[in-house]
Image (cartoon, rainbow, N blue to C red; front, side, top):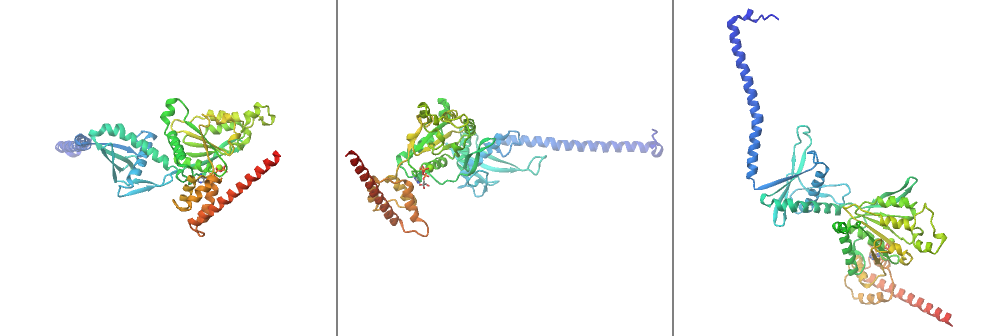
Length: 470
Ligand SMILES: Nc1ncnc2c1ncn2[C@@H]1O[C@H](COP(=O)(O)OP(=O)(O)OP(=O)(O)O)[C@@H](O)[C@H]1O
Ligand SMILES: [Mg+2]
């Protein structure tokens, strides 16, 4: 291509234009350099100043981010949740502004510190400070805000905080979450494709050990045993046994066996797996069901003496009772025993098995032995101590002049806690409230009547025996 510019501008114009272009070019280069310095050098200077300040700061900060966008995976969220739950127990009394989060499968809303707010905590004499911080998302996702809990503590206490306090926060947070969890009730369902667990509903039974009518000493013993079991992860691991424990509750109807199971579930915050043995189609199905019970659960088999014909099956088989022999397709006692023995739980929670019966004498010895049924609890007729608990629950009465007479009557007559409760509740209902004293008088009448009936029955039996002798 021919250059025609010198023809129009002449040589002088050309040299002036060259100078101008050089100045313009150098200005562009200069401004680019300035830009470069501003962006890179400034960032570096800011980073350097930040570092300098940080090294002079006497505190250390640790972040617990809400999601795992930083690549640390789901465990990071677990830590964030544990911190949130731990703080929810701490902050209600402290933080001036709270937010209530409704969380799935959690009974009560979780109270958390609000963004920008903070709470202090103390552990082994070390004071730490927690705050919830919200930041704008990164350049890829500006609309998404990042949240994190910031923990600030003195640098010189790093060992205590990192070595002990953080573990305490995680454990306590998880324990609070477990306690707050909405419990569920499951039952087994049988289909053409096999048996499976079905979530029937939320488990909201109000029973508690405090309101269970039973001698205080026995109650304490059971609570102790349950708590030791639920906290026994290390123990079971050390002794090399699967983390499971079997309870047998036996006694007449209406003595509180089912009520105690509900109290156990509430105490431990365990879900309830209510196994209806008669609905299970085969040993294989039973095994499948048992293997699907997650840890931190109670497996319940109520009225085991009525649950198919497995009750005393071994003995019957030994005696050659053909009627007791089962076909391969049905649940057998040995099938059940194998399932109990093979029930292994995960390492982060135990499985409690609770069997109930009205007729312990009918049960096969193999089922009752330790390792399968570790603890046998007799639920019996109402004694005076148990009555006092019911009177307190139902009537709010702890002492009364009629208690002396009632105590005497309890020594001589057999009445279930369910029957006593019925007497007390029927008269303390709204609308027909006749006062506690009327209830106690009515109970005395019922007990006297029972005593008379029992005396008559005894006399009749005696007369019968004498007649036979003659
Ligand atoms: N020990 C108890 N403490 C408090 N309440 C009790 C007790 N026993 C029975 N009750 C009351 O009686 C009702 C029936 O009790 P529950 O169903 O627990 O008896 P059960 O022993 O399981 O009877 P069954 O053998 O017929 O299944 C309960 O709803 C509860 O109100
Ligand atoms: Mg029951």
